[in-house]
Image (cartoon, rainbow, N blue to C red; front, side):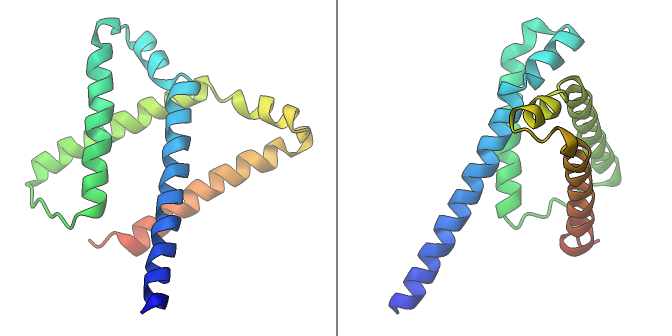
Length: 143
């Protein structure tokens, strides 16, 4: 009995720690690197800052809910196409903003004295993203 409780407690601690790490990384990515302010500047939509903030919060909460709940929306192809279009626009804008601030990696490698390993770092990030996406789409997504 105590073994089961300790096992569940261990799983809770690991899950919470992972969530804090991912959440902290996301917040650092969005705020410290200035992704959203740069998007606002490029799109010249300074008056819509509250809309950007609300959209991020609502999107994160809705995405978290969909990640943990067993929800099947059964939407027509037309709505799924619009949904996919919004995902593509968001990812494209995020990638464009990331290229604006990608000089973080050279600065980081200089500070930790790994200038010769910059290419290895960037390739590790790239291949990690590729293999992670392939793993998600081949294992978790059931079509």
